[in-house]
Image 1 (tube, one colour):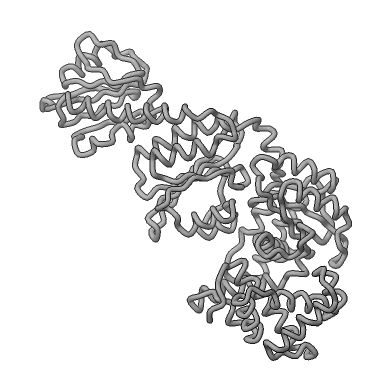
Image 2 (cartoon, rainbow, N blue to C red):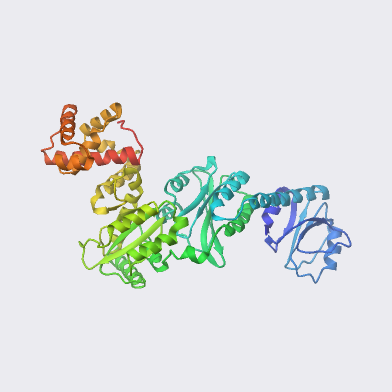
Length: 528
């Protein structure tokens, strides 16, 4: 397959007339010169004079195969030709030699692409090598996603690290929220979409990848200089990528389409204030979607939101393991991870499942999880999901719990507030340095730690989290009680705080959480 626009590259300024009836040419093998006896077929591009073209077409009036003919040089004023709807005719001002050389070059470029791509053996472990070859050829960037937009692999050109690109590289997925924010759409399964960033001068184009009629993934191709030849290369790359995907049935086991539709609809809301009638419509829609789920939930719903480092390879296996642990439960791959829906008759009931077995699954596949609070309205579902997702992004960096790979959202809501505050600061203050919200004595202690390679700040945080109990702190940190006493006395020498004052203690705890967010998640220093 060769796109006609790519074939015309380099000829744009020399085309005097054209009629295009066939956009994509199949199995083009080369360029042939027309003469009075040249047979015509769809496997070749033909070039000739106006007279040669008239003779050739008159001999092939009944030909139904697609034909592409280029006319070189001057055309008589009385030149008239009747074309069937299977023929492309392009008249140029070039000589036969120059026209032949340009067309041959374009065809040769594509042939060379095929040679380079064919050097990569089609198997999943070689996907990066294929994308790397694509980057070398085009200087573009390529990101491969599974149907749930978990990033399978990527290879980027250094000059295309725009903000969205950096987000995808960092988080390894293109979430629904990112789609809505950056592109104002939710990705359908069978349509190509294209966007252009004026800020970064980069074109983003998403292509669905289908194998045997089944959606197996998406290719996001970006270029700072998109041309017809770049798009032609992308189409060729898509044909090769299909070979790298395994059994399509196994890859789609992980998707619960009704559950995915429910989650998608949580985000299809206006950012403006709505009246009670609109709210009612939204709730009715969500309730209808809940009724369509494979397992009908009870009144209150919690989400277990997860992420795994290698979702593209193990999604189906993870789902199978989770279904054994959570029988008769709605589970799906979505938004860069796997989402589990738990339901309860009331608001406060904690989930009852084998937490140790769940932690082993997370360890086995290098995953993390956040268990949300309960909700019964669409606004609550949306809020709980977003909050859980934000904490999930922080988990590996903040290391909340040294033994468990899952946390309950209710214990870490302060980090959601900190993250929201950082976003607000960025939008309204021109920076997102949360250090300005911290207790000054705590900042001073953290600076002392950095200068002296000590850990008094982390110790103080753990001490307060353990309700200022020396015995409990010693047990958690696996240190002697005398060491706890020494550290407390040293902290009192370094900073002026009163841990008997409940308000100050709360402020210190919140400041420790902010500084953990600042230094470990934002990777900022302690400058004010």
